[in-house]
Image 1: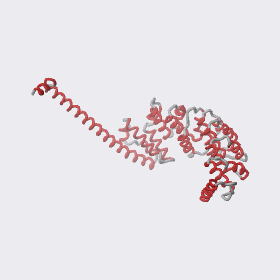
Image 2 (image 1 turned 180 degrees about the horizontal axis):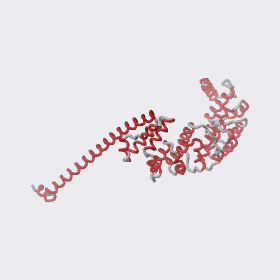
Image 3 (image 1 turned 180 degrees about the vertical axis):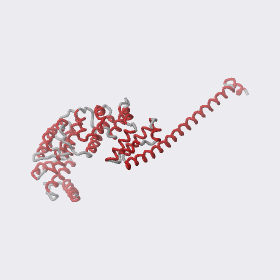
Image 4 (image 1 turned 90 degrees about the vertical axis):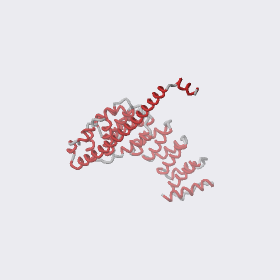
Length: 357
């Protein structure tokens, strides 16, 4: 009894009732909040489903009956266009549709985007101080082919944030093809491998224009620009750049020399093999292997003495590359001088490789 009396002297029944009431209120608030969240989520999902179906039907009508049908905006779209979350849903929907079509249907999607006033949403995002919104806005403008925004997008091609500049660079190339590479003139930020691949893939959709600035890009102070330019020389076989590319073999940057070797293989002339051989001894192992690879395609039997001398290399990767080159140039029955066990085994391996080609 004493313990009970002591407990109620410290905590009165009124305190217990108040605590129980507070707990009940907090529980009710939590349950109510969860219920409201789930209700709103379910409602948004229902609205998005309705919008999705409405957009699909409207676009089908536009593509069937012509762009004049775009003037008849469905009432449901007008109703939800006032809400930011649904405007973004509509933009994303239009972009997803446009990714899978081309020609006039794609132009119709762009007209619908403009008709719904969604351009202003993308511009607002591009001008945001938040990098992810800025990148999103530029992406939308690029996907919707908004050429009129090019001048505003151009400064972002050299933005400090890699995602922002990637979208800006891709947008310009998407607008103008090879002419869109003009951002390389002033680029001081990195241009990484993934972006190289994306830009080169985009360029495949365009007829090649003369790359009048290629020589200046090869002389850029930005090594990333030089490497990308060398890839352009290689892929689009810019033979008039041969002399400029040869100069890149003297660069300190190992990667620039590597891509210069590859580019020279693509635009080779009668002197290229000798030039590569002259630089061979000063090169890193990967670059030596690349020189040997290029010689296997542009070399001749006149290079045999050089190649046989390289068999003295202790490095088996280089030995294997030498043997591949010798057999590519002279045929699979070419005799390797003074073969040891390792060289003989490698020769058999290369013969099998070439037999499968």
